[in-house]
Length: 243
Length: 294
Image 1: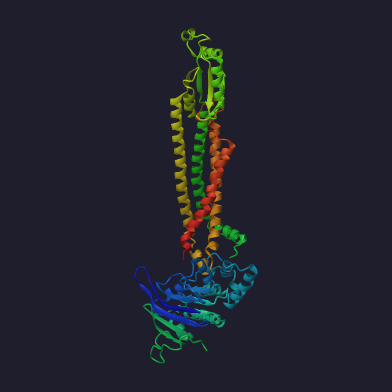
Image 2: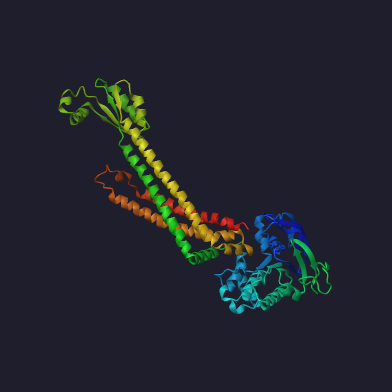
């Protein structure tokens, strides 16, 4: 579903964000990208969205090589990749319903589809009763759930989340993770960039650790830091599905 | 991607209302700038009309010798009529010129004149003043022709003045248009900059560039149209004001000679509205370009 092949990204100021990263993520996987700030997590997410282009290497998303993809095709790529950010990125002047519906309107879905799918996804994220509220009338957790609903409403193949719980308290963060887990169970590949150790340890999913742009660990059902059970940095079961 | 007119209309109306302060700023900028452009165009057209008016009065006179026979006089007359650059000619007989001289000359000078010694003449109006020289070249020295006279130096001065005036007004209009374009573009850019987050969300959920661009262009079009209609109204008012000062009983005044017909005013207003619509929509498309390149 996602493949990085020897990808390197160097910013104009000379910072090496990602260095020779190779990574395979299978359909339906739930993967945590972990690592300290500046380790290259966000750059990886941005490259998957074609917001950044690597200097070397190739990237495949949903079976398409995206580095040489013509610009006009990028919007169509993004329709297959839902995205959630730390700062929610909701449209402040639109209601919850309108924010979610916007993702369908933008890709030209008819009104009948919008009116069927948006209530369904609002039900999934538990915001049916707040469909007419504006974002500023919601809590942080609720706003993030709207963002997840918007990212998922057109049933993308992949859902990327960049620090989705960065602005939330631990309890709310767990709620968001449960939601992402439910989405993952529908067959959607989920990639979460985070440095929330508690959540990663709680979820026990595949963990890819980056440090200074390099993958230093790729562990199935891993934890945030070095695996306490083995005391080592295992590199096993890459690509394994959650049983 | 299907992009419905309903969606564009809805987005345009919502965004214009939501960003009404920016909308008012853009509309006022368009109105003020294009009113100045329209006024300059009006003056340029007025100068052109004044030139035409003055040109209509330019006469070239072919004086026949008093001794010229009928066939020589007839030859000159028919040749003048055939010239494509001569608008109209009238023949003044020796007797008519004699009577005219009586009103122009002092009694002392007139006393020396008789009908027989007074030259007959052809008074012609060329299509353009500069053709007076062509008439001169053609007929001066021809059999039976005494001399060809025209106000050559005045024509030259008038042409130069009008040309300079027209260039001045055209340059002013162009400079104003350029500054109006920059001002309007800047205003639209500020409006779009305030909404860059919205644009980035649109990009994020897979909107194509045209999907994002069209509502912005439609907004710019509406702002440009409203602003330019206000500008056209100002130009209309200015025209009415100038016309009220142009006294038809005194056609010699510059204001009277510069007056514009209804169609010319309509043409100027049409150009103003067209520029407003173009600047609004194309300006928006240009202003949004950098925010689309993500």
